Image 1 (cartoon, rainbow, N blue to C red):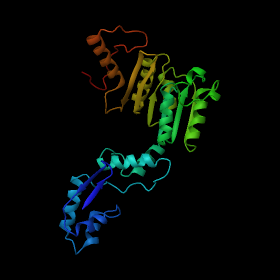
Image 2 (spheres, rainbow, N blue to C red):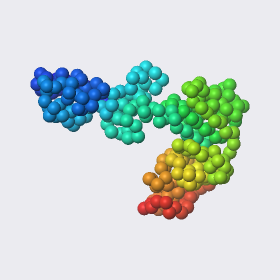
Image 3 (cartoon, one colour):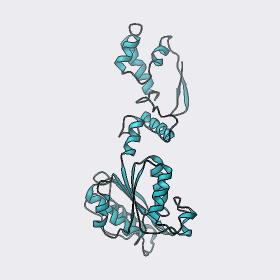
Image 4 (tube, one colour):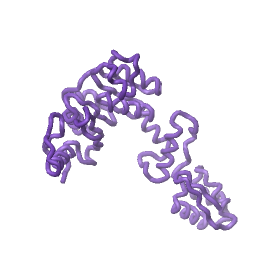
Length: 289
């Protein structure tokens, strides 16, 4: 008997008795193990059915659930990826691929800064099917933006960035709800008013600096218990990687920043320039070596 593993793109060959393929053919995702046993009884003893299930599971040839029925829709390839992740145990917040997609559809994500990094982030979130997006920026589209900011076209030059971003998201997926906020975030209090109810906040802003913008986002999100990703860049040397933070579960941005600064100072001796990571002080929420 040959069994194809679509997740690893392999075919496994087994030397089995004639009745085994009969059992395997009934594993279509519609039956529990007990129901499968009844379906092949009395020809196949219950213990043999359980042994087949255990053997297939050990060989990673069992899917956790039946694959999504949406085989040709907008997110069909993504659903296939979720099926793969479920089979490998890498997707833990949903029991089906459709359930995983539903989580995205019901989520709300805020993106601070819709420029060189943020425009790509917004496009990716919209393409993935995140149902509610808050886009925050105070700039207008310039010709110089067009070579790297994926949401904007020549006809958008002179437009408010967040409005142009909203129009582009509506073209990607008209069902997504976009809230455009044409403003600069200067204080933690101002950001907290906006992100209440968000499931994730992503900082891609570089004003007044990447580090200070990330500080504002991190402080607001830590106080509200909101997962966040902080980062962004300006030019070739001023920037910060996208640090993912889950309050109470991971180290925070301030500890990452302090540790990175110490490592740079100790091992490379770089001068701390304007806008670069400054040493700061690690917070009490987590420990950092």
